[in-house]
Image (cartoon, rainbow, N blue to C red):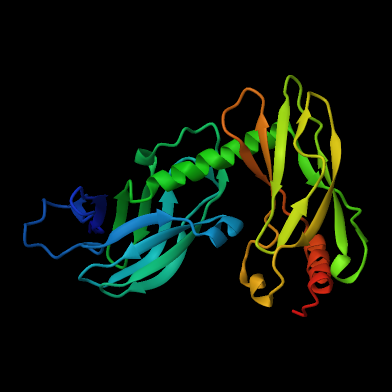
Length: 283
C-alpha cells in the first residue's frame, strides 16, 4: 500500500506578506475548497536580538493569522552556515499571536556568497512539511554572514587575544584593572590599523596605545584599563556585559571591522568582583 504524506511548499506572497501554499507530491492538484494549509495566513520572519548575538542563535518569528499554528521542528537552510540542523519543538502559536523559535546559527562558510534568495525555513507540523522560501529578514541573515566572515578574515590576518596576567592598581573607587591585550603577529603582506576598543554597558576599556598601525610580522601588547560604565546593580541584567570589541581595518579592505574580544570566564568573574569594589555596590 502506498502512503503519501502530504507535503507543502510555502512561499511568501507579494501582497502584505501573506503566505500562499502550493501543495504537491501526491495525487491530483487539490480543489480550490481544500482545507487550509498549516501555516496559511501566518507571517514568517528572521531576526536576531542583541542578546542572541552572544549565544549565536537566530530567531524564527511566527506571527499567526486567523488560525492556530503548531510546529514540531524548524530549520533555517541557507548553505552559508555549517553545523546547523533542525531544532525540535512542541510549539503552539494561537491565532493573532507571535512566538519566537530559536535555532543555532552555526559557523559561517565564507566561501559561500549568500543571497537572500538562498534562504529558506523548513517546518515540520503535525500534518505537513512546510518550506518557506525567502522569508522576511533573509537580508538580515545575509548581513550577519557578511559581518562574521569579515571578522574571520581579520582575525586570520591579525590574531587578538587577552593575556593571562591581569593586575590591579589603587583601591576602592580608585581601583583600576589592567589587562594585557596581545595584537599580532600580523600576517605577511598585510598591514592593519587599530582605532579603538568598544566597551559594554558595564565596563569601559581604555588604552593610550590607540590608534595604532602594525605592519607584517609585528606584534604589540596593549595595557587595557577597565573602569565602570555604570554603578547600578540593574546594569547586570544585560547579557553583553563582557562583549568588548577591537575596531580595526586591514589594509586594502573596505569597512572597519569589529573583532570581538571576550575575556575568559575566570577574568569575567575577576572584573565582576572589581566592579563591586569600584562602585561600592554588592550584587
